[in-house]
Length: 186
Image (cartoon, rainbow, N blue to C red; front, side, top):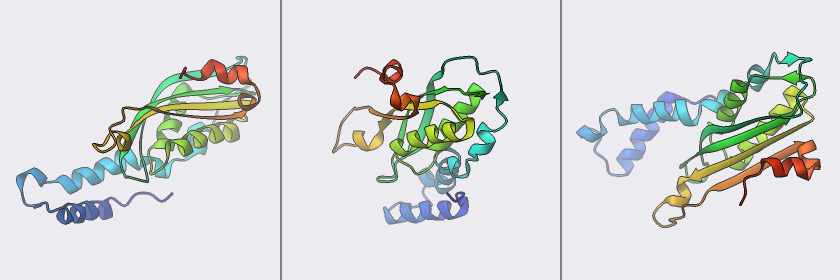
C-alpha cells in the first residue's frame, strides 16, 4: 500500500463537504478538513506503511519452551473499503512457537497495523496469521477478530451484530482441539 497523502485527503474532504452542501466558512466546519485528514492518516491509514519485518524482527531465539502463546483483547480499528465506514473490535492472536518468540506488544502493533488501512476484517485477520507464520516460523498461528461495523448499524440496517472472523494456519488449521480452545462461543 502507498502512504496516505494528507494534503490530498484534506482537499478531498473539503470537496466532499461542499458537495454535501456544507458551508466551509461556517463555524461548525472550521478546521474540519484538517481534522478529518489527520484522523484518517493517524487512525485509519497508518497501517499502509506497516513494515512487518520491523515489527516482528529481532525475535528472541531458542527460548520457546511454551506450547502456545495467546494474547487476547487486542483493540483494533479499521475502515471498510465498501462503505468507507469504520469498524472497531478486539482480536485474539495465538501462535505455536518453533524457536522464536516476540514481545506481546509487537503482536498488538501487528494487529493495529493490519487493520489501520482500507481493508476488510477478513483480510486483516489473514494478514496477521500470514505474518506470524512467515516471520516467526511458527508451527501454527491463529487470529480471531470480533468487530462492530458501522455499516451494520446505520439507520436502514439497524443490526447490532458482531462480526467474528477467524484465520488459522499450520497446526491450528490441522488440529480442531486447538481451534476450539480459542474460538468464542456462538
